[in-house]
Image (cartoon, rainbow, N blue to C red; front, side, top):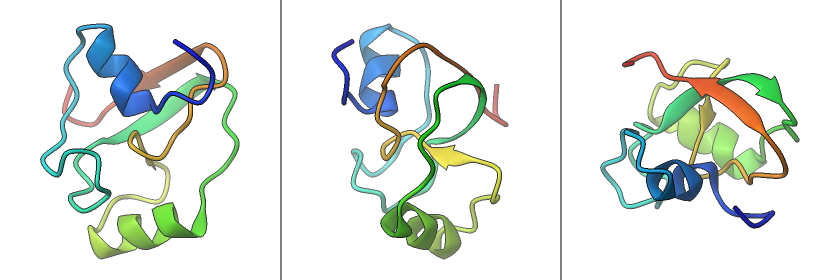
Length: 79
């Protein structure tokens, strides 16, 4: 994937399952994943606000916000 691709888009392009109900609009919070290994740049204020609105656990990242900058290993609470 090109650098800057959202993690949500990369997972979908790889043909892997990921939850999302809002079409990557940061409205649903269903794409919450745990980053196990790899580069993680930290979350933006917008992501923090979206997580708070949707009651997403602090340790999760919203895949629609995470930009792929290298190899990542992730998991999700629903897998």
